[in-house]
Image (cartoon, rainbow over all chains, first blue to last red; front, side, top):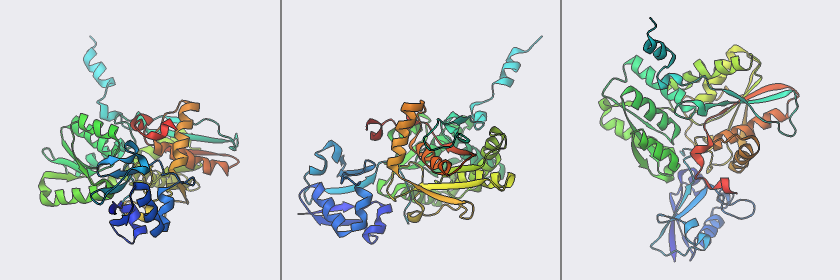
Length: 94
Length: 309
């Protein structure tokens, strides 16, 4: 099942300027793993050295923060949209 | 007979006249720093709007009034991630101007509540696009009805950095007994760094000015910019900094907790990042006076998760 992931402007440098990437997976964790396997330099921006999502990176499934769902085990379907959002407003991308 | 009302009025100026003249704090001792190196920070939350942005906002509004671009009936408009918006909203309310702001929807919840308390009209823009989307929104708004708005444009308005050239730099110079040797500040609009550094170098060309920015495109350093992936603000001067540092959000979070718990100094994330950057500089010195800027207080970030770690 393929789910769309929306990429924030500062990270589009690492996705070849793509605003969204559609990948296969049953959970948010699987989607992000596939995403960072395709776009390897993205990985260190999303995960820390221990492999945990960085604490200022928020991942939403539709309008819900996955921290309040089942975190990276949150299940997704092709109807869902996943967004990667900085926890607070930061830089401005070209 | 003493006219007591006149007497009291003379000694009690309006709130916005209290912008600037903030205290210079001496920071606690850190390991690895020579006892002959002093580490200081301007506590900018002492401004009535609670942040360093009061200085720039007041300067841009006063300059707009002087030039005739801002007249009664016009609405002050700009894009902001929070603190500049709070400053516009406070000053606008005090001077009788409507304020309209575009703020990325992922800005902190405390900020959103403060903006609405001051009566500003706020449009929340796409969180994926950060202040980028907010700026584009404001440009469209102004283009539709230019006569209705005073577009303060903090990223490109020289009155932003001039506020620091006129006030912040002189305060630091005088509060350190003209002894400052190093100035350290983060880059957001770049107003604080550009204005303060420009003046300090005029006062004493041997003062070193060090800028810092987040080390990654996605970061948690509110108000600061990762320049390699950002549109560089029009007021930024690339030739001014003697050195650039990159600071990580994790280091800043750790420092925010450390300052609160061991020194009783509860500051925002960008202030904590300023401390980390100032320590990088201070560690290399055998003597000197290192000054940085604490843009705001920690009370605006209490909903952030990192306090609990």
